[in-house]
Image (tube, rainbow over all chains, first blue to last red; front, side):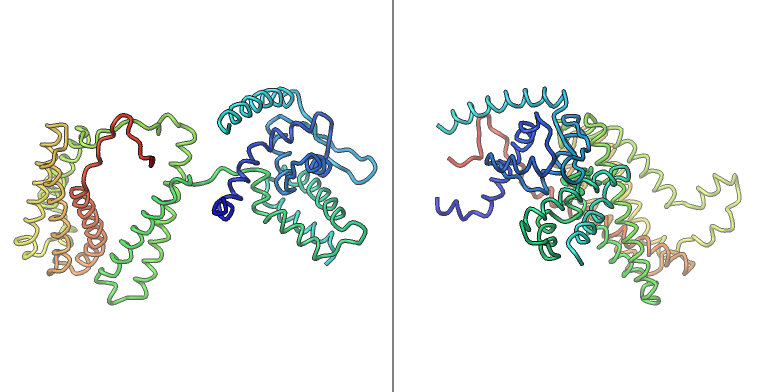
Length: 112
Length: 307
């Protein structure tokens, strides 16, 4: 175990594991509109910290794929771009949630 | 420099790498988000330049961030990196050695160096275009490059016959250039043929060896076309003939003049040097393949995992 903790590849493996769940984590929090910074805070508060340099570009890519829609709003503060799920995003989240639960079940069986 | 100026500079560097139509929108959003991040980090105290630089370094280099916003399709496939480097280095070595061996290199070393640099850059540019086209084709027509089982000993009859035709043409053109020219002109040999006349000694003692080797290669390819397969003997003969041809070319370079006209002889040897090197490398590769033990057949159920 001590050897494993010193393995240089371990942080990379950990990163790859987390990278796989980023999209579903982000989609899960965008049923209500959020802007980049508030979304990052919300995810961190729920135990899923995501680096800003990863999250902000990801939001734009998901919007480009039609899973999110966005608009600029000026409320109490500077102009901010708010993102929320599009119809395709809602469908994608539903499907990914199902796959995630199947995966958890499978992995629990493997790791038991 | 104040913190906001640092952020603006960073945002500008990122957006310059994006598509023109995305720049303003992404820039506005990125600037707002980074400003908010910095304000949160600074808490009550005003943010300074050092804090802004620390934040932005953590965010990533502008090129990396721009790539995250819009992942670009690579020009060359990552899997091609090793073949590209191998071919590029091999080609560059052939060019350098070829230029060094050219008789003109001794008299004009500066020009030879410039020629070598130009040829290497041209070679690298050519390779980039070829590999980029290959990567593009893989993405657009995946069915064309789909893996198919291949019998390494199966010979393409079309290719073999085409090679026989090329060899016959080479033997005729190099063996009797004046006769070929006369066929085109319908009688008299054109005056310019005097400039490519062989040196008598070369024509009498060295050229026949090359022609004989080419005839041998032609007979071999005709046999392979007839059989439709390569066998252990034909593989050995092929490697032996390739080695003999490359050695004959090196002999031509080292021995006396090939052509009567000095300028023609220098030009021909300048071209012949890299060709001889490539042929020698090709022969070496063929011989290596002969001595390599065949891969063991894969047994059903066999595994390379340690148990």
